[in-house]
Length: 511
Image (cartoon, rainbow, N blue to C red; front, side, top):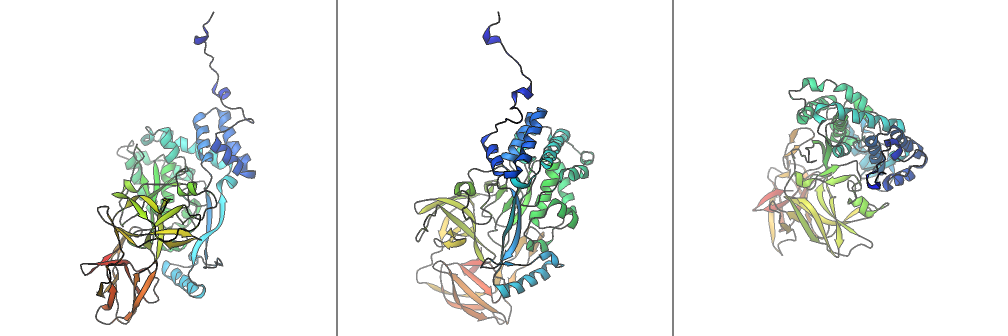
């Protein structure tokens, strides 16, 4: 007689998996299937396909993609006036950035300030096909198994950094077959075919030739698809970063896109590719000052603002995604900053924000959950000017004076120097700044004779004008300027890209 404790029955893997047609899936997958509506049948085809194959790793890959698919999709953007009316404008109708910007300026003179927003969202859960997902999974596994630099890549790393099928909010296209074929001979070109960084550098150089940067696409905010980039052979930094992801991940090179929503010392933002080490860490060189650096993920980040706030919450642009995590401390020295918010807290408000000044406005860059009248903003980059604020009806509402986060991590409030005033003479409205996209240094903007300039000082929650001066051969001069504040010198009728500054030891200090 056999002892019960020694009796083992080994069943085939296909019998241990849930039977097709009566499967129950993990909670996140079941939730995604419910959200898919009529497209549920396509997603179930994928799950059943790998279930019937008896391939547990590929089945887990399918569960990962489907369970984290909520929130991913194609966003078609359009330009709108302040009343929410769509204003027709397509930058690609113009031959270059200068002409497109001139046309947009004409529209803004007619309709007022324009901004872009989502016009349509095609959720992946509702439109993606089984054929596309199966191709994506199979070719991702093929690259992982066949490329020599990927031999030590764990399944967890593969799932997080190779398996994802999109870069951001672009239309879905099949990209893996093209990218696999394009780099099929990559190992033969390498000195060490097991060196993932050598493989990545060869791919990176090729992608920059494949899709070079074109500033015209700054004014084309809808992300391009793989097919569009392959045909147009131009893009902005976000497009190029997406193409990097297609090329890297198609060849089992663990890569992510990092980005700063708004630079802290210049206008615009930036996104770039990063190759990760075995611990999932990586960084690139920052050419400008960043208050925050975020890392895009396919996986839903349960501690993100969007997850904490819940569906339907009106959140600032770039902070309304569930698919990013904070990578700032992989780049620069950081400081956790606790700020006491001033003024009346808007009803129902749970979060406060810290903003940087970019393209003429205070832009939310990070968030903190309110604890009474205080909020802590974690891992803030240093040597920046920022503003605490609430976000109400899609508007930034200042909640305290501007702050300087110093190089050593201290916080200094720009509340003024009592009743003291000063006289300042100014010759520069914008300092020389490096441009990471164009790989150039943009020149200093100086005061020009005959032009009119207006000096603003940040007062009680807004910019107060200290008057206008017409420049001559001498610097523009302003008297009775409140000391110890934040200032902004703006050329009349400009696009307001001038930089803010403080006066320290009698000189402009740029922020």
